[in-house]
Length: 232
Image 1 (cartoon, rainbow, N blue to C red):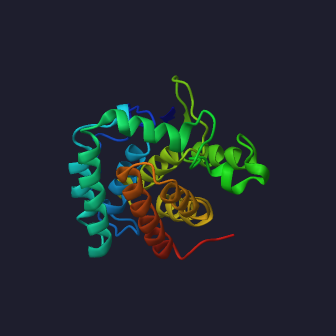
Image 2: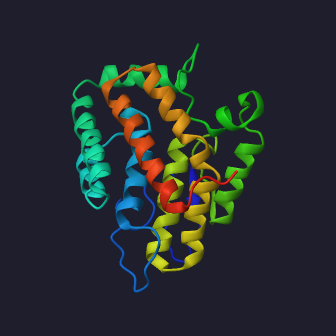
């Protein structure tokens, strides 16, 4: 979906993996404002919002590992999501149906996964909001990949974009990457992710997605508090 332009020979695609491994373990000599736990949790949230057929058996355990470095109450919420994720994989058909009803339609989308729905007049897709998000990707060195490209402001892409920004902050120790991370939370994701979580909860389609909504809300609130709140 989006390809990373790096000075090395590495290449990756959004929806797959950025960097040398699915979980960032890079240590740097500086003290970045983002933590490995926050960065890896962003990646697992991106995976949780993907199509269920793209889930991996290792995802719940990776989430448990990621959230272990978060504050205790938030870590407990993350572990509940991991448990629900594990249980949901035993009934893939119900999970597929719930995902479709929530995010795809075709007749009614119960919880739109696109920022434009919440931030654009009349919820129009591929307008100014989508263009601004695509510009953020380009500024960070990302470009459309060869596969069919999802609308840029899909929630899964935005969580994985945060993972990428945080990964680069940890990898390089450069303040510019940390600044991009906090600005994207404060000036964009924090403006709409809580509304999405509320709609998912109201729709009440599956225990996994209910638990995902709860954790998405709590983690977004946590990132906002770390970033200094929403900027309008």
